[in-house]
Length: 316
Ligand SMILES: *[C@@H]1O[C@H](CO)[C@@H](O)[C@H](O)[C@H]1NC(C)=O
Ligand SMILES: *[C@@H]1O[C@H](CO)[C@@H](O)[C@H](O)[C@H]1NC(C)=O
Ligand SMILES: *[C@@H]1O[C@H](CO)[C@@H](O)[C@H](O)[C@H]1NC(C)=O
Ligand SMILES: *[C@@H]1O[C@H](CO)[C@@H](O)[C@H](O)[C@H]1NC(C)=O
Ligand SMILES: *[C@@H]1O[C@H](CO)[C@@H](O)[C@H](O)[C@H]1NC(C)=O
Ligand SMILES: *[C@@H]1O[C@H](CO)[C@@H](O)[C@H](O)[C@H]1NC(C)=O
Ligand SMILES: *[C@@H]1O[C@H](CO)[C@@H](O)[C@H](O)[C@H]1NC(C)=O
Ligand SMILES: *[C@@H]1O[C@H](CO)[C@@H](O)[C@H](O)[C@H]1NC(C)=O
Ligand SMILES: [Zn+2]
Image (cartoon, rainbow, N blue to C red; front, top):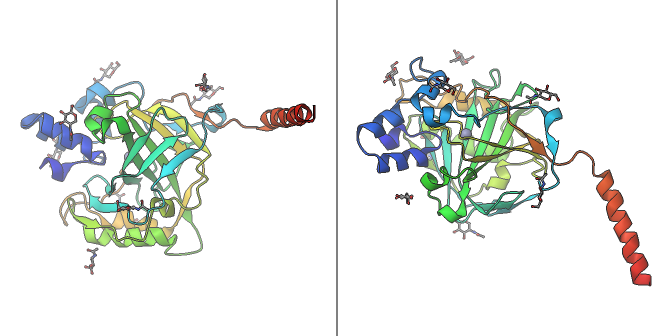
């Protein structure tokens, strides 16, 4: 039951189930949803008040003009993101579609305090391209979908129960997805991935992602050195305030036919239950956001100065 009902941050709830067996477990895992009147996001603060009612909640609207420059926000190091056999099982969790990654995929740098293991990828969406459903918005704009790559501090050995108790235990990479117009079936990696949605139309079903596509392939077209950074939370109960958020400025561009498959292929329960649509949390109060410094002219000037100094010193 717990496993069947688990959400997009599923490992956490499984861990809760293991730690607290019995009725608490069942209530905890059953009681939240996106769209039923009795358990939708408006109720999360009551259902999981310890965190969902907190002061560092996600998602947020990112006001680009308010993002402060921070030169420490360097490029990430991605390990295994080019591996075309690293995507494992893709599952309909009843709340999202989630792809578990095989071990050995990691990120570091990018001003993260540690190395993080990449655990899984999942998505949020609205109702096709017509009703956008990204979680983060930028300057008030909501995008059709958002992809989340969930990572946990490697010192916790992929134990998310421990990671979610650490205020920087989890690092999520967020990618906004925009419509690629004038074409169908693009990008090819997304065509392969979405072709499997028909195999998992019922919640609890899963399918093996065939070898041939990597995380890099799914992130096509994104300059991963340009991003927003803030401290926030998981966007599903229990909404733990444990997340270092990275939201990339570039979008992944996916054709409309493929975006529409998410809202037309998956059921939230059995085949007669509603389709999975509008699976995103609403905007939470603003947090301080930082990004790469706007202009590098001062640094360039400084570097040029250094270069000249070096040349002079060498000549001396
Ligand atoms: C919410 O209502 C649905 C039926 O609409 C029911 O199946 C579900 O158990 C209810 N959840 C809670 C937490 O009461
Ligand atoms: C949420 O927090 C606010 C402010 O701390 C409090 O007034 C409110 O009662 C809390 N709501 C719940 C459901 O715990
Ligand atoms: C953005 O900054 C302006 C002033 O610089 C402030 O009034 C506004 O509240 C800020 N908005 C957010 C969402 O932080
Ligand atoms: C950048 O990193 C340095 C060294 O860790 C630190 O002293 C400084 O406060 C950081 N700058 C910002 C804006 O966080
Ligand atoms: C790619 O991932 C697979 C599955 O985890 C692994 O067996 C293989 O060694 C990895 N390849 C490389 C080049 O790391
Ligand atoms: C989603 O969009 C479809 C097609 O436009 C529509 O029939 C359906 O009612 C929408 N679902 C919801 C929950 O808004
Ligand atoms: C995670 O760590 C906790 C606390 O040490 C432990 O009780 C639990 O069994 C661990 N979970 C897993 C899945 O290893
Ligand atoms: C997905 O479903 C199709 C049609 O039923 C089937 O032919 C295919 O083998 C399935 N793919 C996987 C990977 O299970
Ligand atoms: Zn998410």
